[in-house]
Image (cartoon, protein in one colour):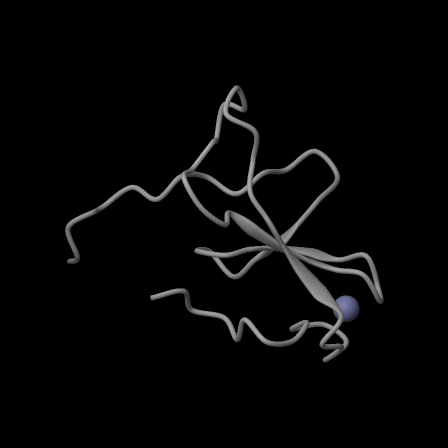
Length: 68
Ligand SMILES: [Zn+2]
């Protein structure tokens, strides 16, 4: 499950958000939503990491890791 609330921007709480799926030729292409972009403040968040992404950052594909 994604760790962030997918109904609003974690930064400004706006509900004016869109789900971004990377193109098929994108290095981090994932078959589904990879990031959430807020149209109100322009912030982008990784769907899986929950982190705010910089202009040149992209959400990594989900990689299953063993938990500690
Ligand atoms: Zn926002």
